[in-house]
Length: 533
Image (cartoon, rainbow, N blue to C red; front, side, top):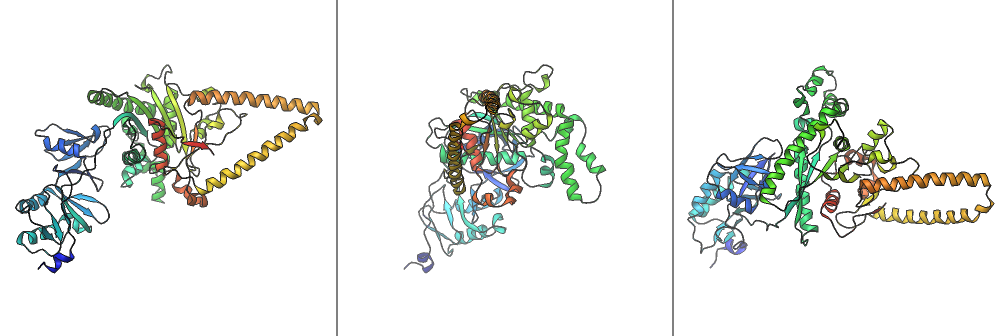
């Protein structure tokens, strides 16, 4: 007769999986398990040569068990080889330390493959296919294993959902990264590095890549092209060291002792704006040098392995980073700016959360063809409607031109927000009323005084010329869509509370609507991504 515990327990069965031993690295308290292909490459390493992983962005020293970044500066991350993975009830996957895994392996290797193992901790065997069942451990080997499972390192802080011997790697979809996007941060990078656990430009690029992978799987799964986009951070916060001084340290020295938190924000966030306006040439030269070095290195490295790489490059600039990028692109081809000449042509410039319009308006007398960026094919100005820092660009082209509403970006889900449906209906009704009023005006035009009619014709001619100029500028700045200003769809909750403005300026990074729009403009999509608001 079967044991009562065994009858009540559920059989886990033999799991599908891979015989490849998982490898993982720890970055800022979070474990990331390498892809199956990367794990195979790490297992095959027999010398001290670093192994390129994560599409060539990272290098692993197998003997030292460390990981370093190729295109940005960051402290090395620890790497482990462990065929035992702890899955927590919160969804985290954590490799056991190698010493613990070796001790468990020494017992697991002695188990007969033909018998079902009964353990209190749910175990899924992906590597040898030993069937397991939850219940009270009976054999000496099972009791010893249960003791090791109970005291494994992750169990001290997390509840265990199951332990995995090996793992079922997600099937890899081969994609060619044929488009590199440099991401230029705004103010506060120094503050984020010193004061926050997350939020640096390197962290945000990790978020963009994760969102990209998710959207490629959900929206581009059937695409025959198999193309992808890579995001590389541009950290210009170290420009002070490049210039030989440390303004932030000096500001801390001369700041008043009162309100230390406010002083920190002023010294390490707001001072970046003054730093750029007072040392613009040095910042632009630093950013140019930074991007050129990484572009040339990546192009040589990537083309060596992927001859089909086209080398298309775009730039994504947030907040002050968008102003830096705009000023840099405006100087392409100008004489006397050799240290600001990029080694590549910019395919697309995405400004988001951008005060470019404010800066250009304050500089004065910049409009019309002055806005066109040389050596840049497409320009987009993307903003959240509640972002207190963002400004539009299209109305800056000519003050007499008619102002069209921004293009509203569709949601990643494809569903329209309810309040947008109501708003579109109201605007459609208002448009109909205006057309009716215009027809009535034309009907009674014969009764209007001649001088008034002449004045109106002169005004109409001026507006027509301004509109024609605006069209030419838009065609030059973005021949793909003939528009520049794009607005993200705020949620119903955001539309109802002004408090959403507090997070609107920093919320772009995690917005699937925002990332999907980037992908559709870079990779293409047969569906239309926006409609006039």
